[in-house]
Length: 180
Image 1 (cartoon, helix red, strand yellow):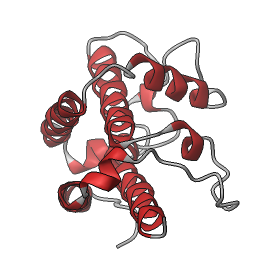
Image 2 (cartoon, rainbow, N blue to C red):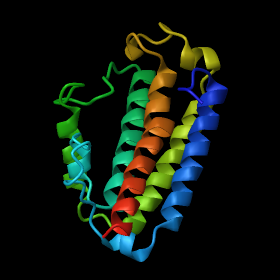
Image 3 (spheres, helix red, strand yellow):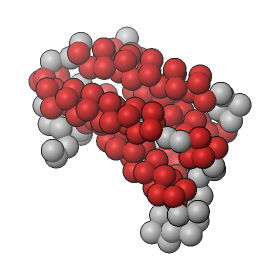
Image 4 (cartoon, rainbow, N blue to C red):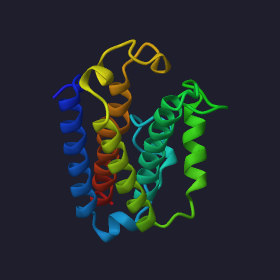
């Protein structure tokens, strides 16, 4: 399926990828959980996140923090506060630095806490999505604070697309562990 363009497709894709990610997490063996991520030998993995995240906790915290960005952004703007999605001092050119700050912030967060935070925030994002109509989510110019995009595209990005990103990372780690 391509990128969701309706509320129904967004909900379906988000739930499907969430379930697939949770199944993948449940299948991780102890060696995969205890071995640090290391993608330095793969020259195709150039993006900063390949070097940033070192374990499952880091991936789950990343998802949780992006859920929080969406939840806080929507709530603030619904309350009349003109707030950008990416909080200051960051922007879309420097959000990688923000991701590193999220990573640093949670280096002492236990894995079980990260799992619970991610599951709770996913549920909160899905409940929030249900409060919007298809038109509110996927028509442009409904909310000035969304800019030139659609609100639904943000929901897709922090759920289905981000879960896909997480699965790719975990599969690459599993493959690396098999070849060790």
